[in-house]
Image (cartoon, rainbow, N blue to C red):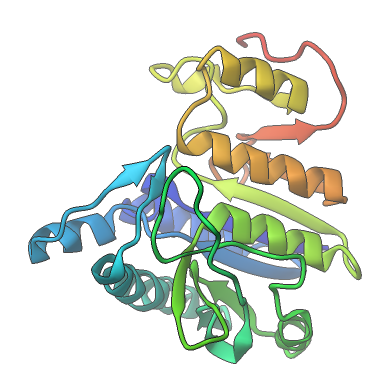
Length: 264
């Protein structure tokens, strides 16, 4: 089993929660991969530099100066802090961007409604799978940030949730894969003010119903869309929520259609 953990949200910004999640990650048995976004750090750096940050539907609009900032923070500061802590646990982590080893090559989309700037979209063969398998076979633990490249000398800011789904789908050719989207809540919530209102299991029909009712909105929509695509592609287990040892938190996604989203 390959364990693929994607860390984002306020986990990145909370030192204690990040260390708890990374410690739980370290103790997983078998092959493992960590993918991370940027949290709010790039926004803070942008503010210090006097650069405005813009978002639309939960996605960052990445102009040229913002691309420089997210590259510095995602591929530099955040990635190396995560790798450094994992090394302190005895974990042979290797920090990577999509440009390193031609790891993840994406393409610039044609924008019809909203120009998000220097962002990357993924294809089925975006991932350099032989390179990833080589690292896993040699005992390395890849720690990927969400900065990719376009193959023409340009860097792109790519949604980390989409990268996680793409990597999981690529790996199922030869491995059983579990995918866990980690963020600061216990799972997908029915009531944002009540952290215990998380849904224990959810199918895609329920997701669409809750999205229509605006119970699920903003960045959680992209996360769940990516997660369900991975599940339908054949990923063994897909889960969303906190990742702490010996705690049974998280929303497990399922393809079955049952009324299972009542509050518990």
